[in-house]
Length: 515
Ligand code: PEP
Ligand code: CO
Image (cartoon, rainbow, N blue to C red):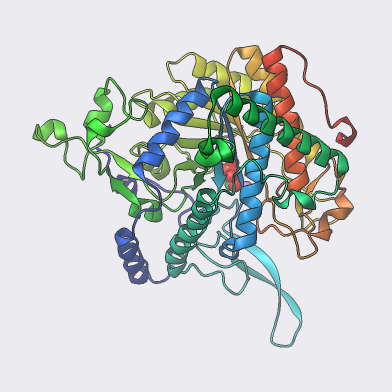
């Protein structure tokens, strides 16, 4: 395999690329980005890598969620607080049932680029005489490329700089909240949970929090722990950030050679037996340490987020995205849909993880409720026949997108399909003797001015119907689970986790919501 460098992806064919009208302007922006400080530290990335190894081994559970397309305008106090509180609440529900650590990764602070199935779309616009006519415009590609407004669809390089500053501010505010006790276990009932109108859901959650508080009180008495445990042991709560690393020029600008000495590296993040392929392929610049004989091996971190993933549309084995991803230290994800061939999956793992680091690669399966039985078992068999230890994660969103029957301009997802795909993922992994390590959701805790949740997915304990979608439909891309629906998923998944532990059959908490 040829030598890797942060720029070697440029020699490979690329999909979903963006062409900027002013290339010199784009270059100036990239030069500036390369000088800006990184957003996350090497130690944080290493810590996540260690935790992902635990997830792969079934000793921790991964909860990943957030917007499909994050907008710059979400970088504001209330939306950030709502999103963070939702992930924290869900993780408490899971923790209470699973009794294993929950690794929380948010799709936030950089989820600004979107791959699209079509490069252009036809929209209705008024002509000079005020008559509505059809016009073809570039598709909305996410806030770091162009605007959602149909008059703002030309790619603008300054949006890349704006993406960096919005990511930085969002992450900074998350860090501020966490270091000021936002995740304190005495707070959950103050979090925006008060907006939930379903009394049963509220009761269930109050029980979880009281139970966790009791356990912590007990631990305090039992261990004599003082002070430090006042925040319920959650003062060390970790939130990791993630996004689809689609715009490789941006990712390259934040790909930085490691700063700390190799001896400081944790065992989980550095292979104990360095594979020959790594030492030959991941080196500073274009020079090989094997050929120089003296240069220390350099490892490269993507420091724009802790975890980055490759989308289902950009994972070609000989393509630019796989090339970029094979060289970074971060734990990485790959979306795996029905078009992935089992032998292709294995070759992909060989390329992305030549050193077989456990938990380095998360396979984010997204087949759809109707297809999971056709694809997941064969994909599991293919990986089981190798020495790769992956994290299996279920994305029950992207294979289940439908058009609303009441309004054909709206995309939606049925809660029953989402739960069906998660349920089958649990069952299939159990049958195969593998572990479902986590779930990957598109969700939001966002509320409108009257305090109502978004209405983008159908079903759940709120029993939202197709005709309700227009009430508060806000997404600029895919439909997201709202506050209540997200909690519904958390409760149902926590029931699977505790059933698995106790060897009982899981309950179907949402029979009524099933069609
Ligand atoms: C996404 O996660 O928003 C996405 C576009 O997913 P996929 O690549 O699986 O279609
Ligand atoms: Co999406």
